[in-house]
Image (cartoon, helix red, strand yellow):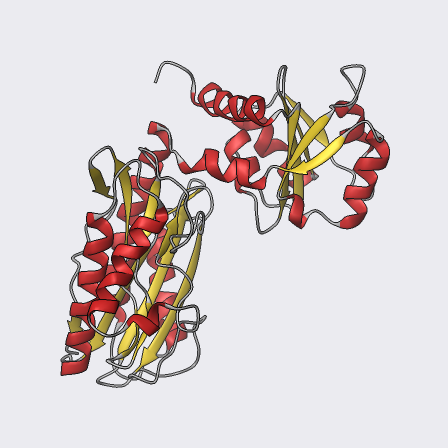
Length: 374
């Protein structure tokens, strides 16, 4: 890459602005959705919210609470880092009007999450000549394709993810609670440098219909433990979906694994630059349909057949009917997670990098039905 990482990202955003006819993008970063500001400033945030303005031409400006000001300034991507008044937007409005007139069309990423009072303050301060519109989809599409630097971070996080799964398996034994299992896993992840982890889990037999945060339930021999392990490292997320039996797998659990493995491999076989997420989801679902489990591909039993990964942990959904085209260097996890009566809810999935003729793995954990005979 001949451009700097910042210039590469900003040039992609500005090209998208040109195509959409936008004069600038205001990235809104509430506490739970910070990916667009991280993408534009390459800084980790801790405050409850922040904003970043990137005009089509000229320098960007960031507006943060005191807890995040030093982090954004230290990243060095945005020279103009200003204090954000949590009770008003005067600093933001001053910057947006600094070119002599406000932008005619301003895109707001995560506009759908912007409080009504803040949106009104923006519109009133900029006046009727400025049209505000959502740029959430625009930024989501841009973030799908990863730079070499982003892929390097995700490969590093993949190694930590593999180790987290190993820690979970090592902690399995009858009598341990789901809380203890998650705590042991997160201790390994954090010790290796993970800054966050989103983790769902479920244990039991074929009565299990889905995963949840951990509970006080104690594991019993014969249980199948399902987990979705998603650490964040240096601003980027990876994920692994696996199921492990505490003891020897029964016939239903083995048949379930074979079904899910075949579906996952079908999804991966369909994957390459230029295909749509619909193509990938259909390939997975067709395996279930061919075996008589098509009903379990519906929204009654499952949400998606995978999704994008990167600066956010759950990006573009892989589902039939969605025609998003996957480009080279997009990162997705293919996972046909759902309930069937064979063994209850089952999970299996790996994150991969989309290539021109297929995919490259980010993990090295074997794709098997783990059996742990403690």
